Image (cartoon, rainbow, N blue to C red; front, side, top):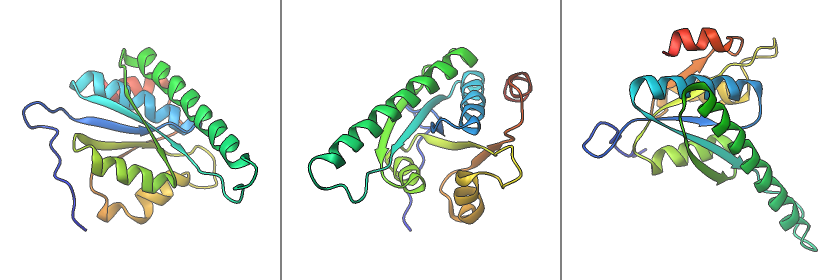
Length: 166
């Protein structure tokens, strides 16, 4: 697999922390951490929202209505993520919206934006496992992932994240 060269430390570039906004508690933990690290290190931040396309609704415009509703929901999630980042560290993150499977959308964005240097995820707090994104990305494909993955323990309070992230 050919990988795009990271350019985050070249002239005219700066590193970005990528976070996925999906409305989960874990996502909020990752956003808080990434905002604090971005502010502390002078990096920037990008928040990704992924629209899952409807399947089986190609008739009578139902699919279009479902897609529009999903896009609106993602924009709301991005608004919330932006507010969280601003409140946590005064960071105004870049926003990206992609359609499709979350792990594939994450990889595609990383390939498109050569300034993305870190993917920040947070682990789930329940006993069912680390959470779908952590299990899918960090668990299965971490040895071939194109950038470092930062996993924030999902049970950390804001104050604990602040102490760790700066």
